[in-house]
Each structure stands twice: as structure tokens, then as C-alpha cells.
Image (cartoon, rainbow, N blue to C red; front, side, top):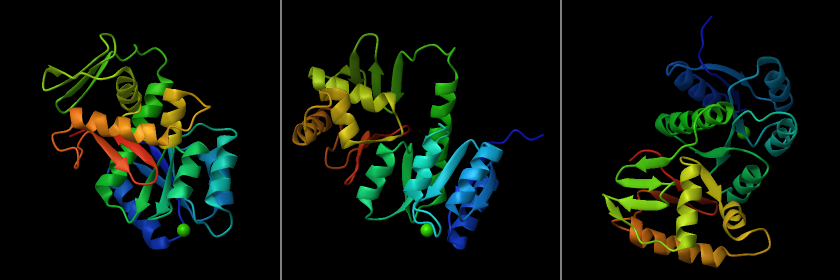
Length: 233
Ligand code: CA
């Protein structure tokens, strides 16, 4: 028995499906494929994959409906595959419980990075005995949760309480995109619309955190969707 992670590819474009499958199998994964939403649901139940790559434009069923249906009974990581420019669709999918998305066309490095991140997160969630993480380091950035301290190249950053909370939130979901709505609800609560405030805070964080705030390295903007803290620099 092999113990490779199993990835379910739900994609109706044969070229893309074969491309993804070839990348996965040559990088230590097993892959199964379907082009239909209905079959995706039954394959998930029968094969219990470790992760699902879900195209949102399917012939028999809207991918969003597949996502909703899966989320009623499974927490398996789902990475949505979406076309460029469909930002609203991506946000909807994330709000419905997708873990992340990848935009077509994508390269193998990006695909493998997304999959690694999600598998690591689901492993962490599963490992209830693991000690609480005390700190996170990315490149020259160090976040110490216990000391409530963020430093860059060993120098302590002077952050406002809100800025600190935003950085901690992003770092606790490192590698994953967080939607504007999700960040706002987590920081300011459910009864506000602080989109502009979030933008201002992010600009201030970047001035303190990034060598060149116009080309951020640590916290990336996902246009029309949200922000992502990178895992590796
Ligand atoms: Ca499609």
C-alpha cells in the first residue's frame, strides 16, 4: 500500500485535467479525475480524498452547488479552480467554505504550493495533540504570539493594536487567502463595514513591514478578494 495523498480533480476541460494529473502524479500524489459535479460528490464519499481541486464551471452542475453539497457533510480541503476576472465567484466560494482558490492559467509551482499549504493546514487541524504554535517566522519577519511582538530583521515593529491583530490573523492562516469580509468580521465584528479602514490599516502595516510597500513581499493583495501572508520568501 502506498501512502501518497489522494487528490480528486474535478475539471471538465480534458487538457487542464490531464495537465494537473500529470503534475500531481510526478510529485508524489495520487490523483483521480472526474468532469462531472455529481460524480465528484459520489467519488468523495467512496474514495475520501485528502484534497479536492474543484473547477467552478462544470457541464452538469454549478461548481458552487457541488461545494455547498460537499460542505454539508465533509471538511476535506477544497481548492477552487477559477477563471481570471471571476472575483465575485471566488469570494462566494471562499465564503461557502472553500479553503483557497487558484486562477487559470496557473503553473505547476503555484498548484503544488496551494496543495501543500492546504494539506499542512488540515493536518494541523487533525492533530489535536500538537502544542499551540508560539511563533511564526517568514523570511526576516518574526511574530511571537506569547510576547505579542512582531519584529523585522530583529527590530521590533511599532504596531497599533488593530495592526497587530490583522498580522496575527493573517499569520494564523499563513499561505491562505483571507477575504476582506472575513478579516473585517474577525477584527471589528459582524456589524460593521470597515472596508476602507482595513485598506488604511493595511497601507500602514505595509509601510512598517515592507521594504517597498508598492511591491509587498510578506502580505500580498489578491485583487478583488482579500489578502494572503506568504509562507516562504
Ligand atoms: Ca470548466
